[in-house]
Length: 77
Length: 149
Image (cartoon, rainbow over all chains, first blue to last red; front, side):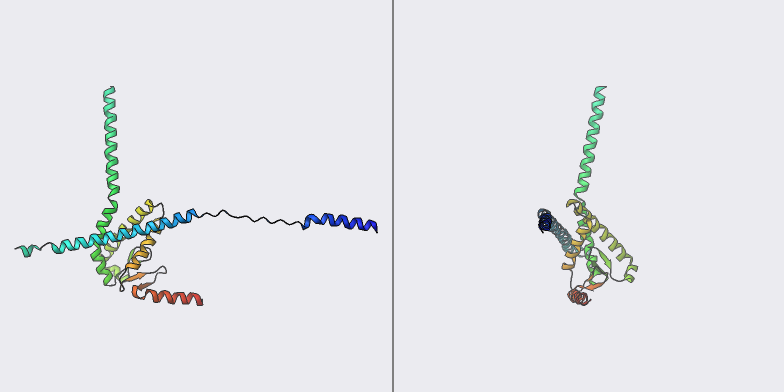
């Protein structure tokens, strides 16, 4: 009887480490900076594109108004 | 001997400086030159757009709306010249912001879709041509189809 008690106790002692669970939660480093940089670049590109096409339209309008204001050769005679 | 060497060196330095200045000047006015050419082309481009023969694409270029319009030689040249200048600008801007010309082109596509007239034709990513005034309706229908599917 005592022998069995000792065996049981030994088994219980061996089982203790198995009950010990440990969880390691790995947290990836949160990189916010590059997102801001990317957004900033996109905004800058958007602005550059807008400026470019606006400039094209502006210059075309200027050329058009210059052409209209210039009297035709026929009118001068 | 020493004097001739120093003269040659001075000449080489001067030549390099002149060439460098010329290259810098050439680069500096590239954007301006593109704008100038595109501005001169704009009235004709607007005319073709109003006629429904040329439309804007999602990737910032222009194209003939129907294949039969490609027969028009003037239209062909106009589209080729316009796209060449636009691509040059996209490449320049991409270099400036250390990105790809495709990203700049997509940004231009969005901008040109927004500023298009209601009657103008727009080419979507899936290749379909839609009039600006029908764009929202077409998008809604597509979204509904996707939700059902």
